[in-house]
Image (cartoon, rainbow, N blue to C red):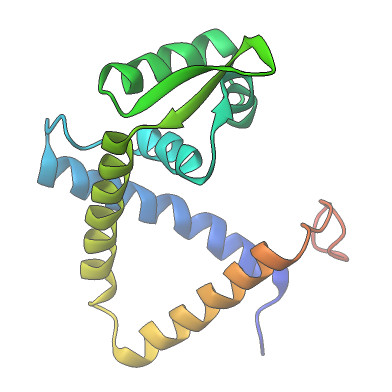
Length: 160
């Protein structure tokens, strides 16, 4: 019998944190105190900024932290010369953040390293299971990029 949407959701939410912990742990073991490699939190920030410039308040809202807390996080990225702060041309009170060339390089290096770790893990699956995983992840990616999320509680009988 095929798995329900709820069973898939439970498996996904149980699996992804473990995968991220495994990647983070392996990255720490592999790169240790390498200042050229961003942490996973910094990687998320770099990934967001690689897509487009963000204001400090937008980043704070996206991470659900205060602007002052986000400013401290951004300070580290600015000190590492991965992020530059500029003033918005239309509003001098607004700080706009964007990646520097070094930030793009750090982001690319971290993505490459994380993919290496994930690939080594996935290489332990047989070809059939890897193909099934790839197909499932491709379907999920398509869903996330082409449709709006379903409101919470709308999966009939599954969420109380």
